[in-house]
Length: 162
Image (cartoon, rainbow, N blue to C red; front, side):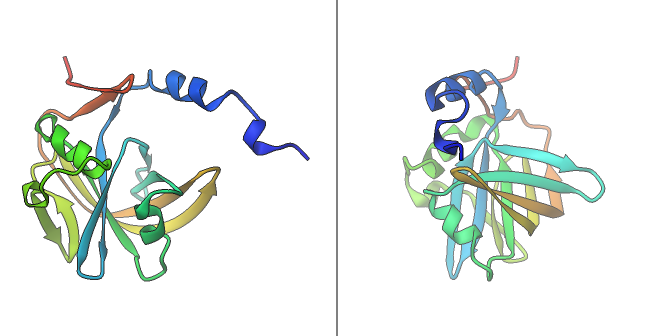
């Protein structure tokens, strides 16, 4: 039997290579009882137009992994951060600033990030184990967007379009 940990290229090389793929920055959100929770994620992708499906990838070590894995948590949010929201990316990536600086708003009881380029509310459709992450497939039930510039992540740093 092949050891999956030692298959393929080394993690550092993989991270450096895929860091050349520019991506937007999202915050995945969910409600935990009376608490709003969020996690920065760049591993977000559109999957299907019909039905409208997206996918987020969450590390097993993340608190959000435990929350989204619960059966009573059936929905989650995705907010695509704007260029002006770099501080929120840091906040939800484990370098928190003041909680009162987070522009929370709710849609049908689900927390989202105000001022972001786009917000999605998703119903959890499928949970797929994938190495040291879990993939959460979500059916988009609500979406809104603006024409503001997004925050972009490339080679381990934030950038802007243009």
